[in-house]
Amino acid sequence: MSPLLDQPGPHFTISRVTLVRVDGRIDEAGSARLQRILGDLVDGQGLTEVVVDLSSATDFDAEHVASVLDASKRRLAELGGTLELRLPAEIPEPVAELTTEIPSFTAIETEPG
Image (cartoon, rainbow, N blue to C red):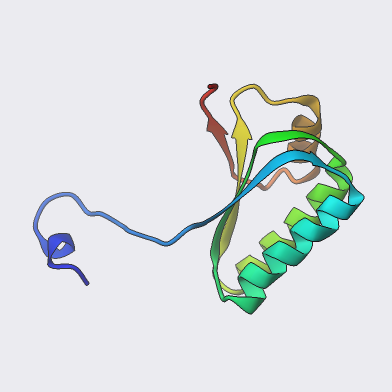
């Protein structure tokens, strides 16, 4: 542990978080690719703190994406990890539908711009 973290005063927690940023449109094949990427990060590389950033996603099949994210979230929970979803400040319809599909998701809104 760093000596800087042992000093009196406020408590700081430093963690390694893996960010998966999705740009563009996600169709059924894209959802399958996202599933393989998340599976490799979690089961292949042993990463347990993952944020999926959908703030730049333009259009996607909410049902397929929700299924992938839900499965990944459950797998990470089994390992003591977390999966969070980063959303744009103005939530487009497909993303709003996604958050309805998985109400237990922690959504992190990003600022516009």
